[in-house]
Amino acid sequence: MLARLAAKRLLEIRQVFRQPTTSQASRSLSTALNYHLDSPDNKPDLPWEFSEANKSKVKEILSYYPTNYKQSAVIPLLDLAQQQHGGWLPVSAMNAVAKVIEVAPIRVYEVATFYSMFNRAKVGKYHLLVCGTTPCMIRGSRDIESALLDHLGVKRGEVTKDGLFSVGEMECMGCCVNAPMITVADYSNGSDGYTYNYFEDVTPEKVVDIVEKLRKGEKPPHGTQNPQRIKCGPEGGNTTLLGEPKPPQFRDLDAC
Picture (spheres, rainbow, N blue to C red):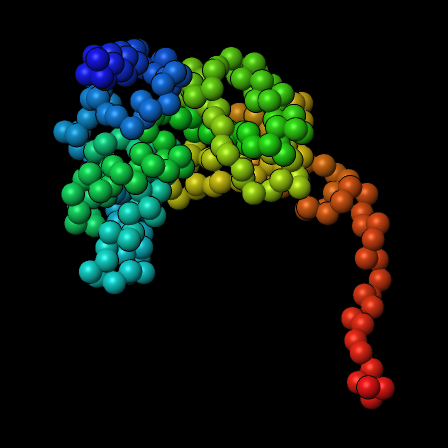
């Protein structure tokens, strides 16, 4: 019985991976990204190596670790490879990282499949991530995501036809006081021009405006999008703690 269920599950996963590339990003099985099946643009025998500019960055990254602990550099090297490859990691790039740090490829696969920061499928040059954790959800993150998907004409995880945009979800970006928020991972200029910026206090209208500015090649100001706030300060300015605080109370030891 268990064997039949396992076989059925594996068949479902294989069918998901065999769908056309345009729909591959909208996989319905969350566990599918823990598996790899060869595709024309993602197979081990495709040549991949760090660019000449990035090879010097590889040396710098490795210099931060003892020579007998090269494997500790796996995360920053995977991040560099992802930046170079337009925002996602093919298996051949993972193999290249494994060769640099002198470990079996499976040791790199384990890291790449564990952390959601590593994309196993193609993303847009501008990868938009909507925070979906409770504070942002209460403040309207679902409306933010819907506005992006409707405006771009894609589903979550899909890439627009021009290759510019993709939309995903990320859990807790750590800026709950400025909810709701999105992150824009900008892969449009490779690893040299890579940026990863927060856009906070967004509205459905504001995220559409951000998208259109990015489409024009502009760099919209990141941080809070609420003109009434300074960074994470309260809207309209402080209402408490306006002067110098009083010193703490303490006992009069001479009276004891």
